[in-house]
Length: 123
Image (cartoon, rainbow, N blue to C red; front, side, top):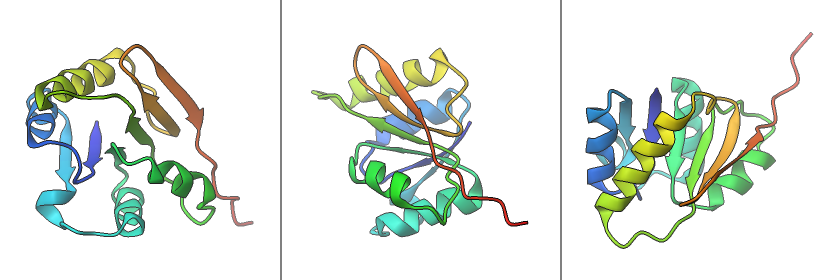
């Protein structure tokens, strides 16, 4: 899957996702300090599912009628070590293939998914 990883994901998560075969662009490597809006714009333009620990992206994704985001995966779990985050991310991504088009919340024991709003088509 093509992923845009927010800069708040630990390096070990990025490395594990890449090792699992995902095409991951990491904000920390490509454009550190980018605003949330810039991150969302990049995800849309590049067709990448945004992966983050930042709850603010939920509000932005549902209020942003001018964007068609490919998807957002929000991790909502306490991580005591980066390796736990890497294991959870890889396990979650391999558990299903319908991330695109959804705002997904990954918790330690479940995944909740809500369809993202879509822009009205121009006639």
